Amino acid sequence: MVLYPMQSKYSLLIFLTLWWFVSQNSHAQTTSLPIPSKAEQLDDLFLALYNTNQFNGSVLVIEEGKVIYHRALGWANVAERDTFQTYTPIRVASVSKQFTSMAVMMLKEAGKITYSDDVRMYLPELSFEGVTIKNLLEHSSGIPDYFAYDSDLSRRFNRTMNNQDLIDYFAKSKLLFKPGSQCQYSNTNYVYLATIVERISGMPFDQFLKKNIFAPLHMSAFVYNTSTHTTVDTILVKAGTSARWDTLRQGNKIEILQTTTQRYELKTRLLKRAIGYDPDPANGQWNVLDYNVYDGMMGEKDVCISTEDFIKWDEALHNHRLVSDASFAEAVTPYGVPSGEDYSFGRGWKIYNDRPHVSFHHGYYRGFRTYIQRNRGNCNTIVILSNRSIGRKIYDMYHCVENILAGEPYEVPEPKPWEKKFLDVFESQYKIQYEPLHTLPKVQLANDPR
Image 1 (cartoon, helix red, strand yellow):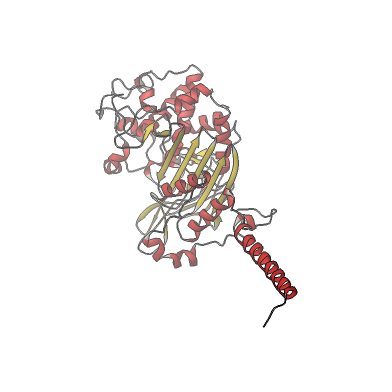
Image 2 (cartoon, one colour):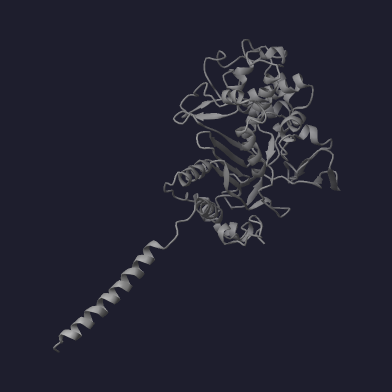
């Protein structure tokens, strides 16, 4: 067919018009997809972890001093059908040490102690020579970690231990090394610090924290301590196994629901804390892993706190509401590097050697796995609290959060073999259906799965 000039012009015009529409549409398809916000990326990450049987707990992420992500996922107490909320208190294990350190700093600022004081001034039962409060704070005392003596302690104490028991146990022991010559993590150090706080202040350690830290900051946090919160025996015997009824005990506000010769069931009328769980790799069932004979000791692992309270705690540290900037700067100054580690000890904190402006601490105890990181350079804070044993996977989680905050790529951690194997158990018995936060109506509570 022969095209005349006019037809050629129309054909060219139609072709160019169609080409323009196609190219614009193609361009729109490749550029109009919005880039997920950091909050959406964080939510995608933790929903993916939750949905693949890898996480249960609460997460808080603060960027440049502002909360950008805050969510709880899963169960706080499976038996009671209590869902995990951002206000749910959880035993934060060794993350508790920063509160003990703060108590000591407050006494130091009040002129009641100095860091160079010999610990025997306050704990004369001990025979250790040359150990100072500074050594206790920085894990440079040489005092053994009581967890290394677990078998002997279990044989010697057929009951819940308290701080005095641990003082008496090591009273005549030898130090592992000369104080100040090296660093070695020891939970015993912080049990002794809590006792020093008690003897100087004249009040129980848990009450000191409540009066001087938690109450002034309007925090609902408390110290979990079996020896001060109840006068009844709460150790249960079920199928030949010692356990403890998994409910919060807070002061005298306890309701006894059932009493038999073998069992006491206690339930609080107030706030309920999260229970610790350890999934069985043989069948995927969540086993309660909560009570321990060490739960009468305070100072090293005993604070129960929520991510909501950590917002208040972070703000207080940032604005120096409890101690001066100079005092807290000493707490996050690196003092000694434990053998083979990439961090140094501060006072109640650890500090990355390659990032001295970043302080952090992990917690691991009885099914609870916790982590806090504060970056003083950019005012970023990461808090991850889990009440279901996740082991070293918490490292992968906070590295993903760090990458998201830095605008860098990340990969969702892969489930462990047993987590994959028993995904059907999780989905049928434990899983709660959650929607992405950005799809929820603004009036709906983010942590309410209903």
